Length: 70
Image (tube, rainbow, N blue to C red; front, side):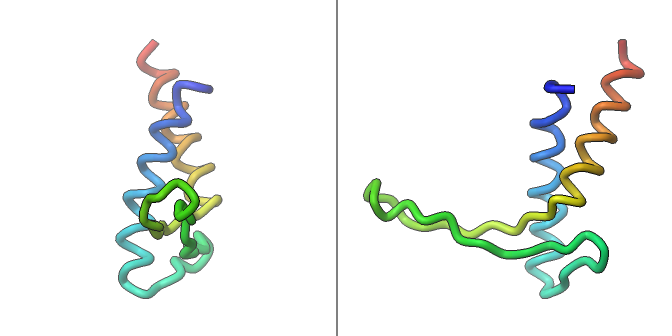
């Protein structure tokens, strides 16, 4: 299961970027926008789109694919 988590994160960031930048919330996916503050480290803030529903579905899909590959 732990091998599938990075794939779920990547899939979530990629799909949520396209849904969120289009101005949609994705319906049941509930894509939301948030800012990661890094000012205290002397870096610029950056903004992300995220969906916990999409993360769980993507991680489950990656887990199933990795399980079939064994």
